[in-house]
Image (cartoon, rainbow, N blue to C red; front, side):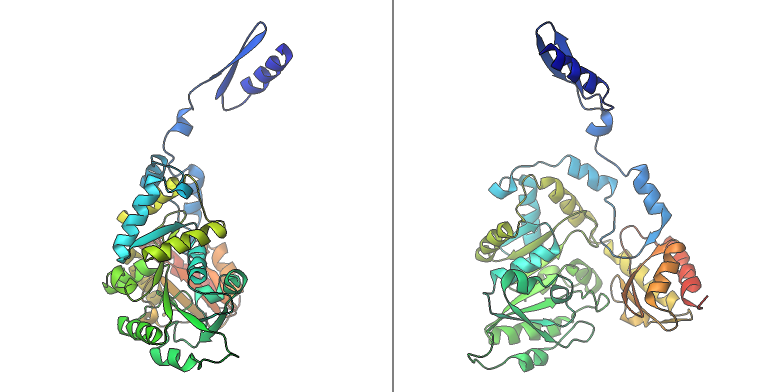
Length: 398
């Protein structure tokens, strides 16, 4: 035993953390834990590495790239936690209750991601072999790895959209008469704001008409509101007004609001009970998730109104880009925080590489299309340098 104690003492006293000290006496061993050093016990703040990364580039790839603010990290470090699978995490419950209140729904369910929230909504409102009606470039169909088919066994009937928006007439035209040869339509999905539509907004009257047409046909409606917060800030229409038109609603905390993780799925009490089972089945049950929920709750209470800054920065970027050669853009199409840029001379991959070399990061979303997304970590002061980089990158073949 003594040799083992001596070995442990050597290993632990040489440990850089100094968190455990081994005290050996003849014939036995006592292990005494020292307090965590201040650098681990104190609430984390933005590290020098984080600051260096933030200073090194203007990151316009997405509003998912944001770093938690010091106040958000503080809230996360001090969160009350419990086992959320057992329904015992108080911070998760507060987040769910606040989200349900804002959306005007009976209950909400915390989710690890927006994709999981969407797919649980599909699974909870369909059966294998059913049909989901959805716009052709909606996130659920376009960016979620074929999950409707893989996880729910449903097919997607794609409707044509105009910057992501379709009409009640489009929906009615896609509905087929009952027939044993056809899949049964069960769910209509809409996305507001629409990612590939360039952050486009659904007019409330259009969304209302689509919801009424869906219900007249006996269909449920799911609202993918990953950026519903943006829609509400841009239009002044409360989130609950949009949400009232849908049976289920997904909202995201880790995009414009700037939380590191999380979404929520809201609906009736019965729907959420069913969704909870599928969340578990899909691997989304989390234990002491209050640490994550605290960041989301902080974002929800402190970062919603500031989305207007992102929208103003996106419009300023678009207006500046409209004056540059090699770029085709209509600033009037920039309604929220997403700017879609069509290139007229160079490939998107070439321009993206040039921009990155100049300290600006964007996403190439097509052969001639680039997406730039303003976010919590992009200020108005960043727009000028970003425009200068675009002028250098897009104007000439080089």
